[in-house]
Length: 219
Image (cartoon, rainbow, N blue to C red):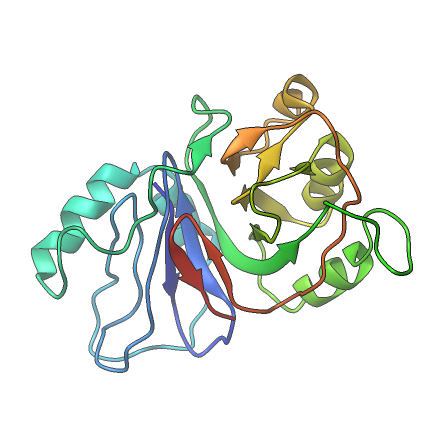
C-alpha cells in the first residue's frame, strides 16, 4: 500500500510508503507522528517532530509490506479501520517491485488540449526545481485534471528524469505508457490505466493540494 504521513513540520512533505496501494495522514494536531498504509501506519510519539528520517530508518520501512503497516496502525485505535487508504482506482503497474519509500511532491496534470503557450511537458522544470526543497527520496503524486484521462501522465523520458533527480516512485490518478521501457528502469509506478499517447502534457500546478485515489494530498 502507500502511506503518506507527516514526520514533522515540513509543509507539503508527507512521508510515503508504497507497495500495493496507498494512504495518507490527514493532519490533526492531536495525532502522534504520521502514518503509512495500504491502510495506514502511525509512528508513535508524544508530539510531532521536525526530524527527517535517516537512511537506516527509511531502509527499515522499505522492508515492510503495507498490510503489516495497516495492522500496526489498528493497534493504536485512533481512527476507523476503513480510513486512510486509496480506493481501487490505483493499480501498481509493476507489482513485483519491492515497497518504495519517499517524501511526496504533489502536482496536477492535463493533456486533453494544447496550452495557450509553451511546449509539451510545460511546467516540468518548475516541478523539478520546487521538488529540490523536499528531502530525498521523493515520490511524485499527480492528479489528472482530465476526466476521464485523455493521455498518459508519464512515460520513459519522464520517469528517467525523475529517477535522475532522486525520486523513488510515481503515483497518478491518470494513465501510464511505455510500460516495458519504464519496467527496465525498475521504477515503481501507480496509475489508473494505460494510454498510448502523451497528448498535450503539462503540469498546471505544483505544490498544490491534489486528490488521487480518493485521498487528498495537501502541501
